[in-house]
Length: 233
Image (tube, rainbow, N blue to C red; front, side):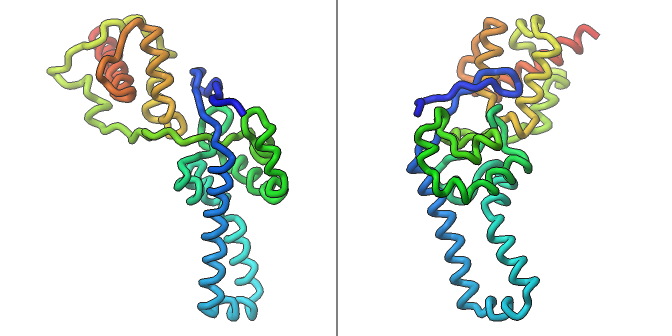
């Protein structure tokens, strides 16, 4: 298995990911399985099964919900189950975004088959199981710094009467560059790509962000660009 994967994201920037080690994936699955069976034991001792056995629709609904537990987690928690959260790994698409409803469904449907084919992960170039291949996803190490949404004060800083232009190089920015910054800052699917976009913009404009973090740098570029365009209007 390769140490790093380089992929071209939906923002057309190169992203680097480290495939999740097999032992982390196995442990994550084991944790999820433990939670699943503990839930069954609790329900059994609570007497709920006695009730469910006398009410077939309730029993069917219960096992449907529990059977879809990994699917619901991966979809609503942006590619993570409880086990994956603890192991700090995450499912992303081949473009570096959280998996869609359809992709999570495919992964869940093929899980039973993959359970007996763990070796496929070992021989796959990107550390993929069959469910990953079919859904266009992969499991990677989670990046340590997930950025939060910027505040309105940061977003509209350029409207402040005391605002000062920091990067005059924004004059060289195109509308496509501006769209790239906006997507990275405000689209939940692309927030984790701010480091790659930051590197691209620094190289493109020939500037350095200095001590600023990646998202702060991108926000400053966006505000400088809007300030510059406002001055031209």
